[in-house]
Image 1 (cartoon, rainbow, N blue to C red):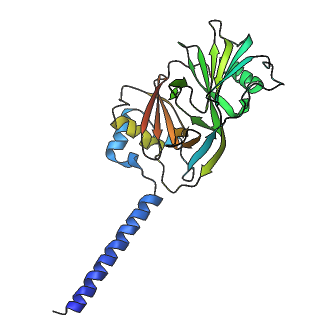
Image 2 (cartoon, rainbow, N blue to C red):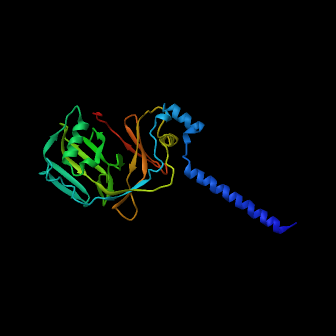
Length: 278
């Protein structure tokens, strides 16, 4: 046997195998993962009466965001109608503002009137959009946006053993007459989009992910879905945030699930009530 030729043939075989594996890996990185095209995925969507063609799509170059916690003053501006409000600050980043006089809201258009208040009275108010209403706590929550996409974060998080709102939230406190009496605010700045080559989960894949984890039974109905970002505090610092692209999926108008569009991780936040779309 010619061992020299055999050795050469063996090397060429391994080389061809390695090239094949590299090509397969590149295909997985470039081509979107369409879990919903499998029989089980299609069954899950059909059982939940979801038309895959009607779901929002995600741009392949959306990437993730980085941001810094804003430690500058969030006190109302001098031109604000509530410039005489009482302010305090927690941990140098969360501002609490108590109005000297309650600000009434239109009961038939709470969302619109609350948005008008935020934009006219709150520092950086134009950076926020309405998110949700907690009827039990009488709270209206607004979330900061970046290029029109919401930057979600946990409603309450622990920091130095003190409960704080999420780093991108603005929470309006109402009284029993649905008047704004105070608010808490945090804000992110230096928001930058980072390049990323990873293919994102599609909305249908996020739905399937929830279903396979037992969080989305066929008895429930998807009442909303939207692509945004979710704030994750980085290890070693409390000022820098990483915001991966995230699917917000609402079930029965009561439950909110956030599915990380990169690794598929799921976080649950209950939605107790909603207000008019007006």
